[in-house]
Image (cartoon, rainbow over all chains, first blue to last red; front, side, top):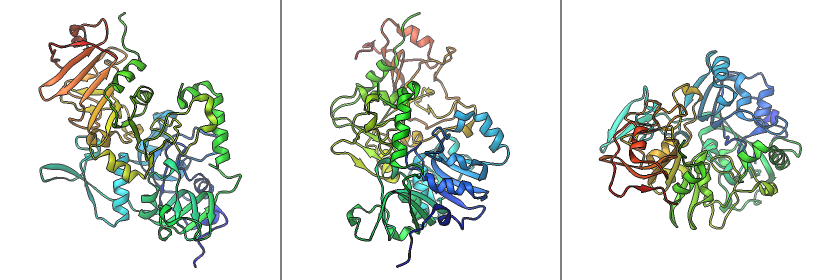
Length: 257
Length: 221
């Protein structure tokens, strides 16, 4: 049996070259593969294409989480459904990155999902009914099929996927938790090399009920257990929630009255 | 200065559109306030992949908060009996299937029901499309909650949207801090006005000609 378990995040990402495309999920704090991102940040790798759901400012302490935005200095292109970086000042984002060559491809959450799935299942393209009359149709071929207009969209296939899974077995079968699942099943399948950081535990084959498996291990190449003092752990999550609870403005934003 | 409806009232009025058995997606911001006022049996869907999540976590229950269960506004929610967890592909199968009611915020709505709610035209690269386009196109009913005018009194209900579009012909009902307006093939019908406001006053703050029905009444909760 091929050994998929790596001892460190650094080793798991060691062969990622300049110009690589990487999918990584992000719903604010949720689902982010913090440790793989942190490890990638330490390398000199550049000209990356990052594909994610929500590209939002790093508002959480970096000792606890590393959002995809920390990779900005190393990026050449971004594909995202939510580019929330304007809270840092859209002007700054445009001046510091976009005007210096960062390519930004906006998409909708639904279209990101369908394009990833299309990439995973080997399609040449898809016809989308969403985006008609909006910026998402600019420069794209349109076609009328059975009286309904559609916009041609290309699939998304990536070189790498960074996945944050809850539990894994040594064959790479993955279980997720709550909204952390997100686009990760599609990302794992749409990428050539899938690298997983595991929040809870890595077990022997047999340790996961086959009915529970969401991503079959055949799609998974490298697995790393997040250590106790790693980023994004349950402990770090609880500390941040406590911290938010203590700040009145944040508390109003995050919690019901 | 006459009173406009406050955020909670708008949320309550929007929640009135829902009934037992409805599955609803609540957009970022004011719409998530509707969760406080919905009737029994309404279930919430969040595009990240939860259907039928439970109530939101209170500030003094922070130990129950879990980043694995959050709604569209990033607020913590609790699991509930009958909840389903799924991936985003499945989520958008749901969203585009005409099985959900969508309540979203809006920047502009046109006479035809075109919706602009992801960008005010300043900088497309700082925009947040998110699930708005999918929800606008795919929902059973699209309810938009919004301010009736901009802060400097300009129209938000317009002949033609000037902000980048979210979708064409998408909106069914608009609930503002002044009125409830239904989008119909004949045009915009003024259904309800905020207490103390007249149809003429609302028309002055609305660019397209409103249809005033004989049963026009004040907003009731």
